[in-house]
Length: 337
Length: 257
Image (cartoon, rainbow over all chains, first blue to last red; front, top):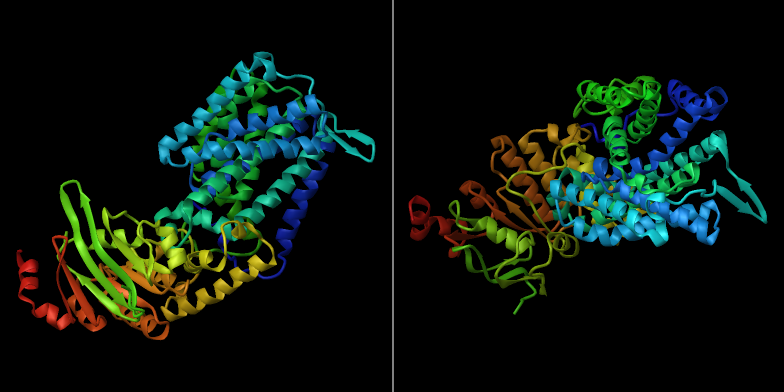
């Protein structure tokens, strides 16, 4: 796998004009897309940017630390319910709910992570799957709080309050810009995180945990930290999601949420930030786009995934890297990939 | 009783796996600045002894003291970080997908940052620390003669070059004591000389003490001032390499004991 993206010095100095055009072009596309796209496509883009948050968290675990967790959907749901309940009972504004959801997910991740991280490989995966099932059971059965299968509905659209004025972000286009801002911010934070010394230690754990231990890295603490941070990302995503679709229900713990996050990361390219951003748009877009044939939708989606696995076993990250290298006028002597 | 001269002292270390006593009440001490050899036939308990002293395994009984501080049952990462006592592995391990320089930077990080939390920062101070590590890493890369492959993924290099990476990694944190588990196993004879040179350089110029498990008797004679022989989990004899080689019991142990 080409997982070394964050640490390769690519040798190019100064600004490459072609790269600048590429980056500015993409930014322009992102900013102007809602003006051109239909309502439904804008909606799909919003969903993609929401799923980007738990996907970043999952990428931290799978791509950087080398642990496959299915619990992201549980923290996504937890964040959604937290945000919904805060909004209903406390009437707090969106930024407060958003932070509250991320914080709640992080806090809950600590007692869940401590026993789970004692497990390795498949046992760990099964344990994290258990968290999603427990989440669903709680949301269905703690009726006094969650209203069970009826779910919590009519949740406020994202609302910002400033100096007594209240602004509601309603409709796909407005939400698009909110999600774009949050997605860009989250991506920036994630970028800083994986480039920090701690990010390097996580990669060391992925590469060889015993070696990392022998060089003084307390690997258990780092794995717990990664689990908690990933949960916070997922909780934040759940908050934005619930305020956008305005319903929180036990359906949020369905397998499809877990698989969507997994496909984004593995298909986009674990260990690559650009790969995961690309994956979020591609796979959510594909899933939504295939609604033109409702009967064949899931079959076609499955076939597309099969094709992907055979054509791009490492996800799209290597392809994007090659494109980026070419834009910078670099021909890399290929070492690892 | 720990004389200030002693850097590591192991007392009565015992470790059993089921009915097998892999290590049977072994005493050992390493003096500051010494290169001590640990030899013995396959299955004599050298590696188990190593794992129990460095925190990779827990001994059943016995004590390990590093400069007078008891470190028995400390986990591997703590012994490395707080004790600055580093170890290598018999089967060479490197961070394969990362380049040589990154391998070394990782090796130094936990010594340059005061806590786990401080490694999560990406401010100027953190960047300066990493830049310092990178400079140190380049020096060690030059020292070990890996300059021309500094930006190659470590997994693409030869076994001998990987040994050198591992060795250079252990020098990153200014170690007090390095424990080497068969550093010469399976490497190109030309590189043996370079590894020996590097060990001697680190010993002489950086004041690092060593415990070296080694089968190559020439290397032991060349490198070590003192050697200890283990056989069937017990200490068989101790002395200068020449004395040890001449010992009758040692010959028997190797030839069929």
